[in-house]
Image 1 (cartoon, rainbow, N blue to C red):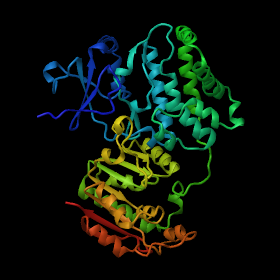
Image 2: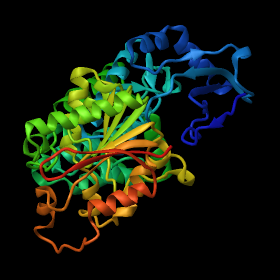
Image 3: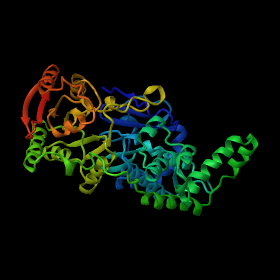
Image 4: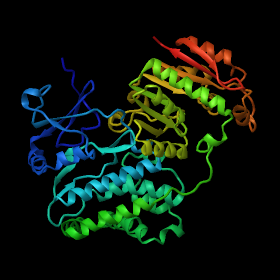
Length: 466
């Protein structure tokens, strides 16, 4: 029996909508989009992109295979489910850069076949492990001679401007993008760029000039706007040149050096001995081998050492989360180099991604999306309990709620890491003890085992809610 539900993030596109039924994903192609879809499909473009891994798999279903009634639909397409849906405001700089290049490479390849993308939403790119994949085939349509790139402004706001914010000012895009789901407005970016960064020709044409044109358009009479729209034409050569110019520029961007970060350097500064690290990794391998999770989350993944250990033990897919941008970038680079089924993402655990967008349902928050079989949270809980003043029972409650089974590492107050955190503040945490932690955990789950993994007394607690 099917139990179809419409994906709340797909309502904006009149060309078709996305439906879910358990692990099965369906997309309708409405009658109004039939001609464009058939034109692209019949050129073999979709098959070529799918076979190359550029576009998410797409199986056109015969009407007898339709899982339900879809009024107004000309076609129904089935897609494979993405293991974990992520959003641009959860990506590191290198992930956003990879997604932007994927979008441009796809556009450049399509343009050679007289096909273009009707929009440039960053939400249309997802990651399967470290590999980007485009998920909205209805964005593809035939090229119209002389047309302007319709998605240029959206591409700038959702790809280019967030990258420039980090590259030119050292400010990460995440909080700003999360606060404005359309991305970073060009006019806003133009206001915050320092004078010395405005001298680039690329910055002038793609940011300052565009912001000026937007201001001019806002103050222009309607007749002038209509005339401008009619004159917005771009030759084929200029269209292709714009795509290539942007690709070349974005590929060269680097995040501004903001110095060392605590967790980006963690692999070299942690307090474990080599023997303790080996033992801790083996504990994670043993846990994964016993549980065999399809999806596991690693909270506080740092650069991915223990995410990789979980994969080695038998986890099929790992999603890592960390607050440190540099650590996420390093973890992403590791996943890409080794082609691991591992997706590291940015997360402020004290303020995780909420349900937001239209009717607070368009983009699902961390809690609604993160449905996994197991979790590990290593050297993590004290950052919430000590670093963010979250009561220890609430920290335990939140961690246990993320997965039915997992390993949580408790870091005692006498550990040097906690002592550093307390060095410049008053110790207002008399209840931060291993006994209190264990009791809070026992109130919510069964403690399967505990294992001391450091000379300071760091302890791995394996819990199970079942």
